[in-house]
Length: 120
Image 1 (cartoon, rainbow, N blue to C red):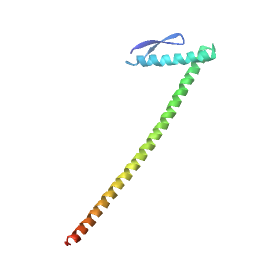
Image 2 (tube, helix red, strand yellow):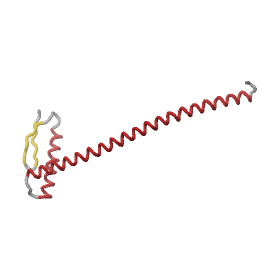
Image 3 (cartoon, one colour):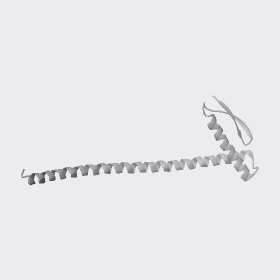
Image 4 (cartoon, rainbow, N blue to C red):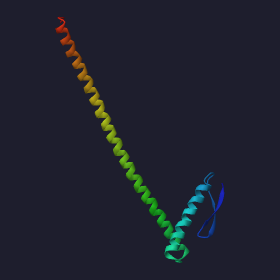
């Protein structure tokens, strides 16, 4: 199992991760470090633990917002799919009715042609 070293808030941490996940873990650590740096800039020296907790809450808030938006998109996608299915069912009915109308028209035209040519 690969191990990497990341720096968060000027502290280094050795972390294990799955094969091929090194870059992803480094990116996540850099994001956490950035959040803590933003908070430190906004609030000053309020304590490492407090900054870490605030950064975790900010990240969790972003996660919840992303999940909420995903649920909205899935609901819209479901509604769109249902509308599409209803439309397709309506289209199939329309095509069937059109075909029936053409058949009836063909029968009438055949009768007219037969009358005009004297054949019945």
